[in-house]
Every structure is written in structure tokens, then in C-alpha cells.
Image 1: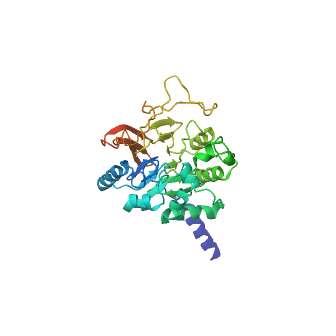
Image 2: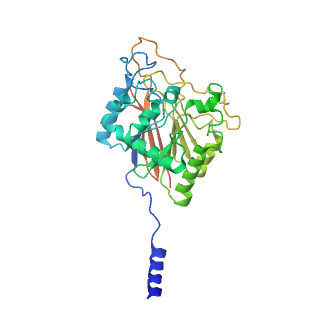
Length: 336
């Protein structure tokens, strides 16, 4: 009898199929943007002077969601910098708050705890953060991961201070863009290893981070190549840029509501931030960064957001101009 039971159990184990992950059904739909710096307009001195771009963005989000349900809003950092508290941005997001997944970046978000306050006062984000802390105990940094409609979303913690040793020497040694022997890099590497190698999970992976990774971190681009990361979305640089590199799409989303996007590398010039890894972004708008003057009528100046459809077999990104709703650029990648 024991032999029969053992044979039956063995047969079930052998014939049991592996966990089935992503099937190329309806693609996940995400909207992404970065660096509008809050509901209160820069420089945050007048709480009644509001960012005029955000209501336009919300109008577009609501209209888009009615036609094509949005699964998540993704943000590349600097979104609560000039707001006095987290409730301003929570109220702005309204019914979309529970599908909002941000990363952080700016000094005010970092030094004054604004990103932390937003995180721990937004239930789904607080849970993701606390669940991750239980695993590695690194409660000092606010990185997390989740899965949304068969897509892995990994939000890194990359405040400006980690990457600006001249301005913030007290944080030297914490830049995981350049060092592998620190907690966040180890967590990220182990997570990607678990997804791709241990679980044989082929679902797409999106990385959110504030500081652009392409041109700044060879160790991360190597890591993303190794584990077939689909898409990396950054902010910080206040430009729109796109680069396809070794199977991964790197996007930088420009500002909204503060200044004209710009700052492209001019023809013939090279980005020298990392002498071991120099290659220009392929696409950006050749405009000089220009702050809007106080009292000047509001202009959108090619403010934009990304409309993303992603599945295991296809990635489509449309860059939407906020003022007109026109598609500025469109990228489609088919994975066979």
C-alpha cells in the first residue's frame, strides 16, 4: 500500500506542470512621468500658486482610463518636493491613488521626509515597503517591488544625495549605481535572479529610478542585460530621452509644469560622467533648459508623459505632449 501511495505521489510530482507565468493576453497599460515637483508650483513659497500642468495631466489620465483602463501610474521622482505635506498630492491623485507607484529623488523629498511621509500614509505603498523591510531589514531605504497585471514593477531608491558626493559627502559610499557591495544592489540582484533564474519567470520587468541609469551606471546596465529587463524609466535630467541598449529600453521623462525640457548632448559632444561607459541618448529635444519667469503666462513647452502598453511579447511607448495631446514619438518592440 505504501509503495502504491509513493508511486502515485511521484507520478503527480513528475507530471505536475511548472508554474505558468505570463501569457501574452491583454497588455498591461501604464502612464508614466516625472519631475513636476508637486502640486504647489516651484519654488513652493506661495501655497496658493499651484502647478498648472497637473490638472491637465489628470484630465488626460481620466479620459484615457475611460477608453483604455489604466493598470498603474508610474512616477520617476520629484513629485512632492514643494508640497507642505503628502495630502496635497494624495488629493490630486484622487481615485487613482491606489494605483500610483513612485520612486523618489530630490533633496527636499529626501531631507524633509516628504517621500517617506507619502509612502507610509499611502496604504498599498506602505505595505510594499514594510514587506520588503521584513525580508532584508534595510528600513533606511524606500525601495520595493510588486507585480501588476503580469508585469514586475521594481522601484529603486536613488535620491540625488547618493549620486552627488560633492554636495553631500556624508552619503559617499551609498551610490548603488557604482557599488555592488551595498544593500540595495544586493537586493536588486537577488530579486532579478529569483525572477529569471529560480522561477523561470519571463514576465516583463519595469525599473523605476530617479537618476538616469544609462550613461551613469555600467554595473546596472550589465545587470539589466543579464536578466532581460524590459524597460527602465528615470527622471531627474528634465529632458525626454530614449535609448535601446542590449535589449533594454531606457527612457527619461521630462518635467511638467516647471520649465522647458532640454539639455540634450549636442552633436559631437560626449557624456563624460562615466569614462568607461560613454554613449549618447538617441532622442531628445534640442532645447536649452529655461526656467519660466515669475509672472510669465503658463506654457507647456513640450511637457509630456509616457503611455505604455507592455506584455511578454510586445512593448509600445507613446510620448504624449501635454498641451496638444499629440504623439511626439512612438516606439514599438516585438519580442519573438
